[in-house]
Image 1 (tube, rainbow, N blue to C red):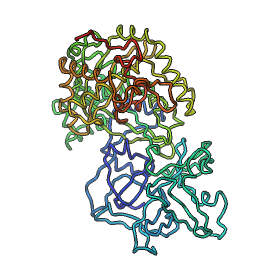
Image 2: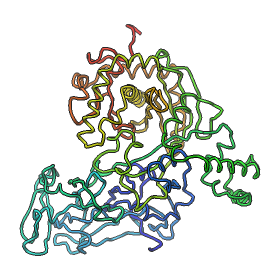
Image 3: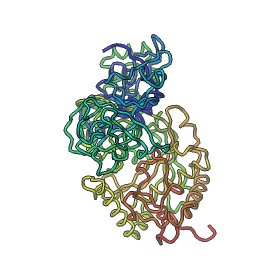
Image 4: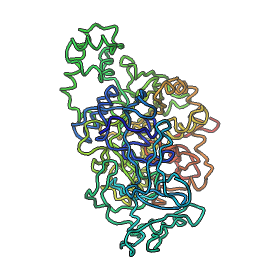
Length: 617
């Protein structure tokens, strides 16, 4: 394998987690590529980019196996020996392999030799395939064919052009030659024709879509990102468009760095464990200090620090990593619902204040999260079906997760961001009183939940129901997020939620809280703007405005009258883009399990909303 490869583009590290991760397609200016599996990455380039978060690593091990040892952020090496060529980077491969000349409409695969790759070392964004022998134009840049096939098991392949045009047969003239052209201006599949110039047969691309299409047959079992083909698969493939939103869904585990110790030195050791875990002797530790890797420990001598490292190593080795990390939310809930400033650390700082003014009846004291660190790990991905169909991503069965590497992974891509937030906790007695009056609402959502999952062939469709407690908290979270964005200038995708909702009989329950937070790789997420909103008077004003906005929706009465069981493609009550929906990057359930009528009185749908105010209040 050569030491250097030409650079063909750039993406941000966070995009390699949520938009363009392993197995996802990336549309570059003139190329379409797919990020290769982890076995094609050079792990040596990742040294120095390790992220430490033991609870997250334990959760990953519980899902993928104990062989997972490390989490790495994608490397970013700016030292170049020649322009456009870097030693480190993320490997990609051209996909799809079928390309089309926009001038002569010729359609052919890369392996046919008809198209030639032309790279530009100085300007990598100009790298492209060209059609040197085009009859219509001099060496035009070709574009990827925009039709593919994929299956719910995560396989993806080039569109079967030959079988599709010849309806499962072979070209009567021998070697087929294809053209792909549009007969209309809309760009719809019905206006796109593929033709075999050898035998004259043609077909509309509209025939490729639908359950009765002859494209919907046994999957070929191909993983382009792993260079695997012919894997046994019982699913049927279906036609999709290049860049379709359902072509890649990331399966990401995330958690906040919650200090387990109230000792400052122990907290520092935990935060710097990626470096300190390699200090197996006092001499090694002294060498680390000599090269400037212990800047955070200037107040401690080597002997004291090495004692703390040994204590940390003993605790780690004696703990059951897999069982420790299965529940990511419980330690967060315990830290947020019982704040202890003695455990405040560099990446987790809490301060309590009074409940929102005017809402003391419904809320416990507000917790201001002045600093937090969120760590994400990319575990795998799905195609066609979103992992949200299974509820919490940690509940997604391992066999439904498309792997990131051949064989069992020993490391995973990760990222970390820092930010701030506001934690609100409902009074449990008030919540129980309200829940006791809404058994019918809870039953309706459960029926909708079961039917929705059954239509998508989810195993045990009745499992994973989050209950009415979650629906109330989720709706409140969205209402408040929309108000904060409207009044405080935050972008709609810049605010996120984390819902803590469990029944008393559930492990770690009862829980009834929401964390609304913002985060970023730099200091933008920790400037104090969101925390300042948590002051009692300010937060009370925003809550009242948020709830007031939920009483009437621009789409009423259609929105208010929407029932969770009224159709098969939605899983919400009175909620729509005009009132409760948020960007899906901000919502942990894909805008499902929402109903503003649980919060306030709408157009007569439910008689007992959670928040009721006296006249003139």
